[in-house]
Image (cartoon, rainbow, N blue to C red):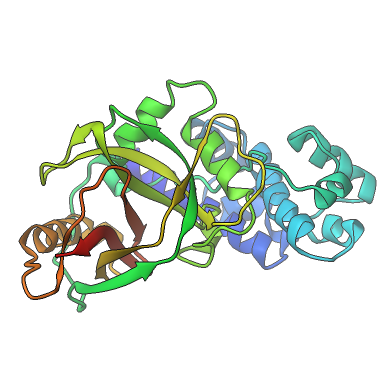
Amino acid sequence: MYEWHKQIQVIVDEIDQCIQNRNSEEITLRFLSQKLGYSEFHTTRKFKEISGMQFRDYLRNRKLAFALKEVRDSDKSILDIAFDYGFSSHEAFTRAFKRTYGIAPSEYRKKPMPVTLRTKIQPFDRYFFGLGEIGMIKSSEEIKVYFITIPAHKFLHVKNYESNGYWDFWQKQSQIPGQDCDTICGLLDSIKGKLDEDVGNKSNGSSGQIMAYMIDPKGRLCDWGIPRTECYGVRLPIDYDGEVPSQMLMMDVPEAEYVVFEHGPFDYEQENRSVEELMEKTMANFDYEGTGYCMDTTPDRMIYLYYDPEHFFKYVRPVKKA
């Protein structure tokens, strides 16, 4: 079971790499099946079993997601974009684009709006499976602690008062119509101008999206005794005036000071649990004396979590002058 999740992850990673490198001719079921050493029939059956969708549907929607961003952000002609992503004509691309997003590419270019993109699926996740580590800690970097001032910005998000942790958050959100992980991540992925767009793994398709915690009297008590509500969303410029999806909330976050606890890159499969424990221990034992700051637990203050093992893992917590 786990082994096939890893195999499907290989396919998913290869698909995105081929799309980004414009190697559309290599993104065939035959090519990917041969790479894994299985028949096309067996591979496509396992792909649907694990991902919940047909291989061809996932591939088409990932191509359209990449293409939409080029329509939105570049000056390339619609025809050139169509050819780049493997469509035979302007008309074929327009039909597929409109059928998927409800708007023609030329109209979308004039007035971009939030649409649900097909983000990259992650079939194999040791944290989700509850698997432990398979080795000792190898990361050489300790946790860095530093203070920063974050300018005023907006935070577009969904939140859940009852959830406890990332996976529980999405399980509970999936019970709310239009707020499941695929829909929310797909909508956020389509929004231009995210402040954290260049942070983390762009090929994931969820660049700029972060978990956050709002200090909230109505929220759950966290380990350090502060009530907080779990959120997921994107930070946007303070002057952002784009459309807000109906199932999301937008809030203004004023300029404020924060303390950052940051761990460098690490091997997710071998080190995830140890790194998480090290982060929690460092934050719990951090001594503010002599820094001139103390933890700020004012309602509506935000805690941001950036989690990307290939680059860093960091908590950004609000502080105030002591």
